[in-house]
Image (cartoon, rainbow, N blue to C red):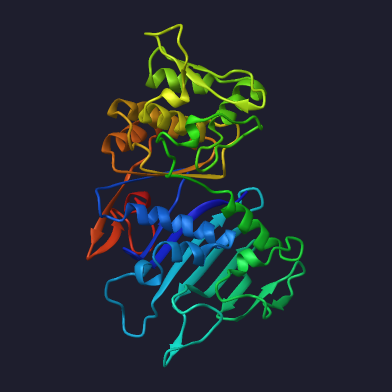
Length: 383
């Protein structure tokens, strides 16, 4: 499975034009208003391009008027959001570069040109380049409604007239046999998992039993958390890492996962009340959120890429070190991307995993990363 090497984003909110490398464990830390979350959102938009929901995701953010870079532009520069991901597959030696541009629907004297509504985001360009030898090969090239895609034999095929201006070709061309390179990239990006919106309120699905279905990976909303724990306890038969993570956060506490029937559920036993099992519905927001993060990071099978946005929310400061240990442990199995306000969490991850947190700042109104050079490398990594 290809892994992420570089990310590039331009024209999106506070991201004027930025490109940076991505490692096994990438940590961004900074204050409010610096644009850390926009870096995270750019990743989610790239996944949306693979899923076929890119223009919908931009519309849900308020439309192009809301998401476009609000600063000054160079003369003649189009108002577009540009996103790019570079991937590499160590097993095959192939490298993939996917880029997409989204802009406004052209209008002439109040008339809309193109198959899209007046204020709807529209895909302007797409390009997928594959390098498996000395020279890169363009597997997909789209400019407006025109373009081509290479088939399994390397022949150029026109995109055709069925592709809407609001659709990405990466998602629309689903024939994995005819277009294998698109299938590889689409599957790789679709497998990314984002954990930022896990609810812990009284109506949260985390607080309720879930269907007893084997769950190797935690869902983005955490709704199958009980099944994730049951899979570790009763399918894999190994909860050693999970038990250690819970004891590190709540010394002496013990996770209880009954054998599932039609539903899976879990509870905690605390040392002060050894005969009492506290069910998920009774737990504090912070305790439940920490358990959800444990499910995301210690599950039976991790996604190829895990993105965490401010996981420290509602957690006690003393939980930063146990959380950091889980993050570093997960990064040994997959790529992990962490965006955080907490300097304590960033420092704990650095101490545990030996990685340097990247400080996100603002430069002339645009989001930037300290130490990042214009070529897309960090200065300390070149030394």
